[in-house]
Image (cartoon, chains in turn red, brown):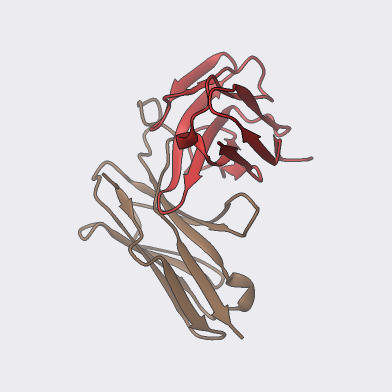
Length: 115
Length: 117
């Protein structure tokens, strides 16, 4: 049971490049989400999914796309990277979105730098 | 507009003493509150939570207190240990299932706790 895994751990992009941050969980969790962590800002929700085929926007969705074709995977796509997207990205999952009953597990993070 | 605020960026405590981390919120729709602990180069891990129907929840050395009228919660760690040194985030969520905010967490900025031996 690997929990929540994220790849890559580190990535450097040039402005305008695109890339996909991978996230996978092996706990059969319905609810998955992406956060970014910036200094002095805490974690902010980018996108989330309540199940395969269902996604919705969080607090800071601009510049990011997501899809959820399987229960296990929830990739985050940067279509045209900008320096403002330099951040640490965390993927998280829980059995459902009711966090009063279900613990949310976070991946180890991807540190992204956009030059 | 920061709806969840942790106004102390850092806290330094002696081993064995009490650590008190504070968190304030502004959104009255929040009714479930969580604390996460984060070590460097790792993701946050869940520590303890409290529902708005309670004013206190204990789990071993960790106790969370909620003052709804003041929109304030605090995390007490007694006794503090060097292994508790980490960043602590408070987070808040509306609890009702099916609403547009279901499952969404709003985090504070974090407080770096350092426990000295």
